[in-house]
Image (cartoon, rainbow, N blue to C red; front, side):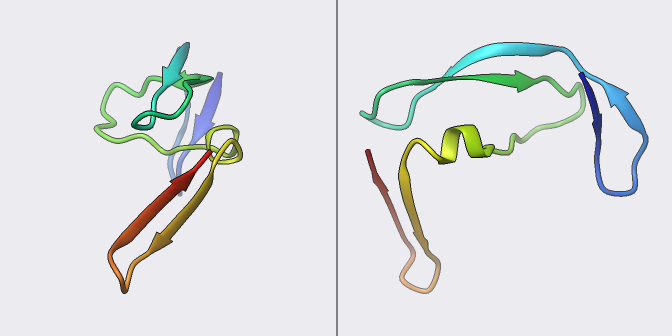
Length: 66
């Protein structure tokens, strides 16, 4: 699959099916790209749409509802 970052070249990356587990919530199966030099991942809408997620920076709180 082809990807392009901010102001970067287009690269082709392999795609894998992975299960994402968030604590004791049901697993979500999604497609994930593997970037050779990427130490972090971004969660896409396919993962975020499964749960209600509240990030409250000033209160330093994170809530995840099924």
